[in-house]
Length: 252
Image 1: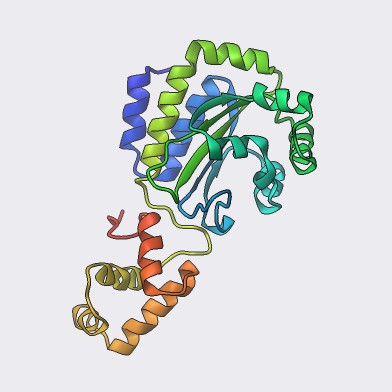
Image 2 (image 1 turned 30 degrees about the vertical axis):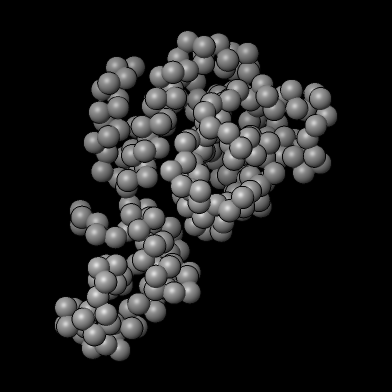
């Protein structure tokens, strides 16, 4: 295992989510966590995390686990997701075992626990990152490899927990700075350019001159950008594109 300083240097130098995630997931696997879920939303409201299509999800789980967990809404009833929404820091999944034993979980939460058991998601830790706004929330679930008990995981954490938290905090901060394009909500170069000029305070007429287009064509690009981002107004489109770091990106 390379030194933590070398790992953090590589993470902070990463130029894409794919590069960063490979480095991070390999490092976590070295600690015994071979199945990860990282989630970030900028559309939190109370216990609602917003439209799942707007989530940034990175995972090393197999599709047969992650698809039901996200697409079927299991995450909404997951006890450790609820914990992450109410707390910051790291938490052992022994807490979940205690809740099961004490009978404090709802039927919906127990269905998630049973699903996790069926899929071999039995031992691990959850890290809830500090939020910079009321609307944003990021968290990660670190699932230990098969064969490790929660007692084994807690022992690993006792020895390496501070380094694991540090690595995840740095990865989270780097993720929030990198461009992310949801699969169904990408912008064309023209759409992005038009939104960037709107963000600079230019009118449709100004943008038409700057882009060498007619005002009608600019309006078309802005309409298509709104549709791509699934928003109602151009202001919302600018905000969402900014959240996804799609504005003023450097072409690779």
